[in-house]
Amino acid sequence: MDTAVTDHLLSTTRAVRRKLDLDRPVEPEVIAECLRLAVQAPTPGAAQSWRWLVVRDQEVRSRLGAIFREVGTAYMQRRREAAGAAAEQQPMKRILASGQHLVDVIERVPVFVIPCLQGRPHGDNAADSVFYGGIFPAVWSFQLALRSRGLGSTLTSYHLVKEAEAARILGIPDDVTQVGLLPVAYTTTQDFKPGTRQPVEELSYLDHWGTPLVS
Ligand SMILES: Cc1cc2nc3c(=O)[nH]c(=O)nc-3n(C[C@H](O)[C@H](O)[C@H](O)COP(=O)(O)O)c2cc1C
View 1 (tube, protein in one colour):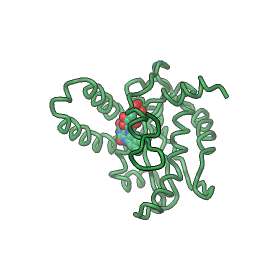
View 2 (spheres, protein in one colour):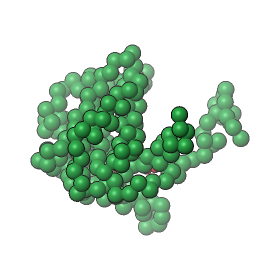
View 3 (spheres, helix red, strand yellow):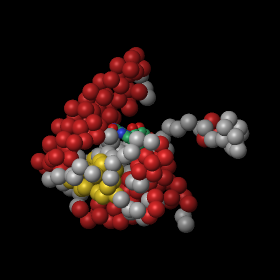
């Protein structure tokens, strides 16, 4: 195992919004290749209840994009208001601009991937943890596989506010749950850096809540 390569992949796979190449087509084969890797992820009871809806058709992307923009614009507005004066200062200014950019160009992103689960969530922690845990490890593997092939994505949740409307556009049955929407494109750069994260020392414990794992 080449740790240098895997560590680089794991630490530099970012949510890509502004560095998506909107003009370069994405062939279905590369998406299928990444999904083949994604479905190596674990599922509870090896159930493999995941389904993956890959959208390339421009008309469908435009219709989903309209939902995405409506919900995303309202969300970004709320975030700007919540940030107050900080919205005009870095790093918040950059974060908000990145989020807004994706909302602005959404239907121009060449491929949307909508990860779905067969079934509906139950509403209690144990059951829902198992339910959603049946796909999110694979979603991240998919994003890693994209990155290693020069593509980028962001896991988004905006359109879920209008999940039923999106389901009608896509022909998704009532007993299937959409868990997000990944706009996917080749990236205009490969030069991604590790993100800013809270130190592990401050958020990991040993044996008892509050006892540092490492100090
Ligand atoms: C469950 C989940 C939902 C997310 N929803 C959105 C979203 O609706 N819109 C968006 O722009 N990013 C969304 N993101 C991406 C996060 O904003 C992003 O991962 C975070 O800002 C960290 O970015 P980084 O990994 O590039 O450091 C979501 C991420 C997760 C895990």
